[in-house]
Image (cartoon, rainbow, N blue to C red; front, top):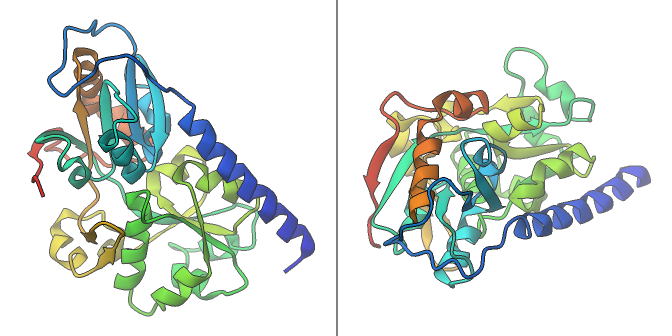
Length: 291
């Protein structure tokens, strides 16, 4: 691999770290007194919202909001540790609300894809009818990127997708794949730090990047394949995650937060244009298991 590419990758790694830090400083709220019971906040003022990294761009387009984005697991930890007290929270896995809320509003779905740089070494695999994602993953000369399973659902869904995929040596692919923050993953790809990256479909759309679709059997997009997805699991530091269809859910914690969630959940055209899926039955309230 050329020295120029190595320089680009080192620089892109620094960019990803800087991007994550920037997301953390995007909007830090203090002295708000927000709680799940809510208060008589002014619903017309800007809401402070804590969201999944893949929601960062769309979150500010559905009403007045000051947006802070991290991986959804990291968001949960910030809330559980009392380090953030936002008006509303929107995460990429409803299960992450367990212990934080008894109900949440499911408002969108998504799919895993493999994003590639349009002029990079992996671009040839994205040409043709649907591309050849298995050949891309098998090419050991390509540098791959993913996110951290301990910090966001994209990370653990990537691991499970590879383990579900037929004809793929999942552990070998994971071993040679570099890990980046969700908010910096595709910036790293664009900067030349990696040749391809496991991402959500909406992330590739937001960055106007070509992507290879994965089969429904492994991309976590199909609610009818829930039993198939559940065959895969990932051991995290504090729990075991089992495969399930991708669902995004939100919870308002104050009056203005609930108003922001209402606008987010009703923004069907904005969400679909951004690359999310919105089933006809959405939005739907869902009970969150306590465990």
